[in-house]
Image (cartoon, rainbow, N blue to C red; front, side, top):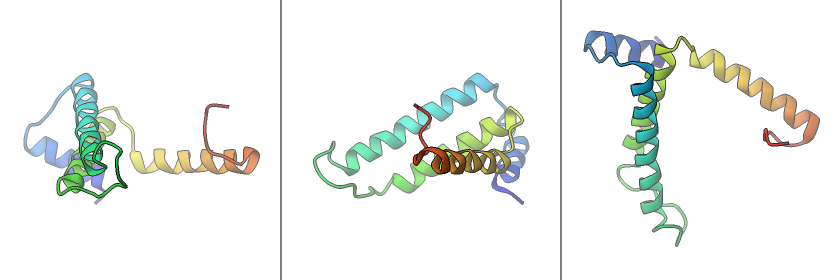
Length: 102
């Protein structure tokens, strides 16, 4: 069973339904918490990153929130990732970088 299917079942089983706006806000909030841990892990940019104890958990929260949002909006993330990797491969072959800002 995929991570997305497991999360979907978990949300259903525990009645954790929310609308897409709430899921997006939750995702942004979790990314903010991960960013805070990154800042702490670099002493606000003063040293190389050292993952604090909460780093793994924060990334897990981000992943969970993203999987919830994707499932709720009908996006199968494994397929989306495959498509994006192909897009980046084409950009790298054509331009030498994967960025979209050109």
